Amino acid sequence: MGLKPNYSPSPTVECGCDEAGRGCLAGPVCAAAVIFPYGYTNSEINDSKQLTEKKRYALRDTIVQDALAYAVVEVSPAEIDTMNILRASFHGMNLAIGQLSVTPELILVDGNRFTDRWGIPYRCIVKGDATYLSIAAASILAKTHRDELMIRLAEQHPEYDWKNNKGYPTPKHINAVNRLGLTPYHRKSFHLKNQLSLDL
Image 1 (cartoon, rainbow, N blue to C red):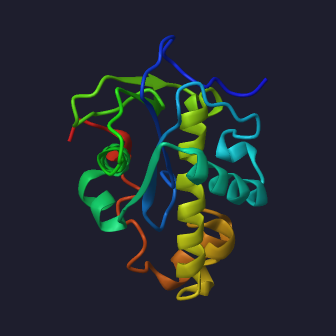
Image 2: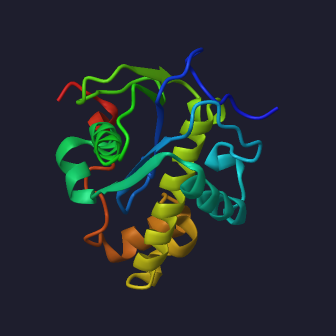
């Protein structure tokens, strides 16, 4: 049947937002925002985690072609260390929304929390990337953008195996950190308990 095309029952400019890389030891968190024409459908678009790498890249081209507007941004490890990963994720999604060529009337965010800086109504939807097309599309754009970046960074630091783990805390990645230390692309704050807190 596919994912739901819209949250609103009547024509509304809806923007789906999601991020990739929140649970990583290294690299930026990437956030994306996507606006499709109201009523747009595509039975192949799904949560990026449910798709093969090849399918994600193929769908990225479709999303870019079919979207009314889209944007992808990076929030650096240094910024993450300054504001914590949760705030950095919200910051990235807000930056992506601000770069859209079309102003949304409603923002759909994957997850249960969000901090909006634009004064636009928003809805937080748990497992939204497996429910609404625009959020799933944002998850695909964020994931493919970040994966490509980590593959490029892996050429500078092959010992951390970022080509395969994309910065996530796999045993090989953790062992490399223990042996070699951190690179400038690592998040120094990853271990802190307040990384998912807004009470800073």
